[in-house]
Length: 372
Image (tube, rainbow, N blue to C red; front, side, top):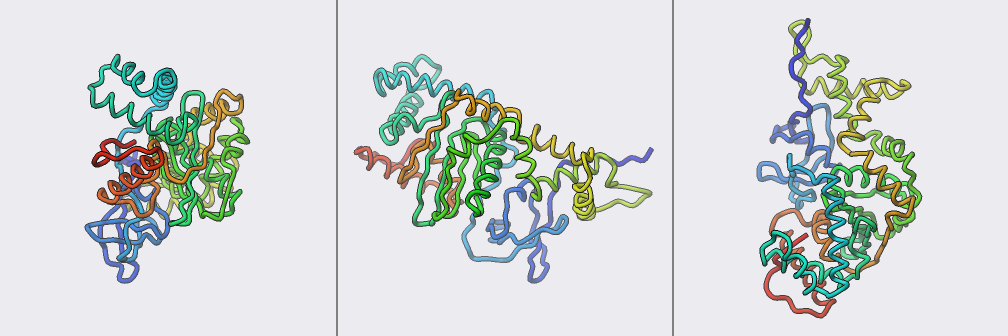
């Protein structure tokens, strides 16, 4: 039996400049999934603009522009769906205590948990600012999905912050699903930024979509088909197909003493994918979609969320605001094109915080000490 060796799920790609084909470093393939043409990133202290990929080679241009993509979060463990739902239930209970007695009642309730006084005060203050700025409808619970819309006239963008506290995997899939429908409705590119506590969709300011209506129109039994359509042609699909094609011995890493390079494997995969997609119910294609939908994007939980919206168990609340709420600060800095470096994020968070305090008529005492 031929030993094909260990099949890696991902590998690094060599980065070359287009002008001189100079090798400038390597990028993890998972990171490439987050890049689009025109994105600027930092590698080896230099700024490069991503242009395209050929096999395992990535071609870039030197640029003096500021980075437009955040740093890679590597293998940081995502929030689980079950824990996310527990947090949403916790937020509902916190809101009930706030309604009964304001921040002082919340602090008294929180002191029943194993929390230090600083954490108790920080949590109570965060939700006090949130509710005074945008009312109770701005906080997601296990019975409500809160969406806030911000019109950023400086960047000429419209941002939709979806507070879906279901973990990064579910949010990744749900954001792709909504971005797919938004792009069809608005006929414009939709930028996506995903975190554990929600995601942000951004599009040109002159494009307006009814995100609440799109969510209401989703059907649980159509989620898988719509996600498959959203994944078509993406680098994510190509990468997972290569992995499964190698596992199925459609691509041999080593044969009769000859070993294929990672670049040759990727080129073979791209050629095979073009043929395989024309075949009906081809096993390797079906396994590729299954692995992405079920293992990476937690499609079953997305179906549960959509079903809850359909049955009115989960209400969708949308608010139009001039500035992000405290609960959306993290999503706002994650999606901002000019917030990449740590000092940029700190400055942006402070600016958001000052706007909220000005709106609710409270003075700022020093730097922002907590962030969402």
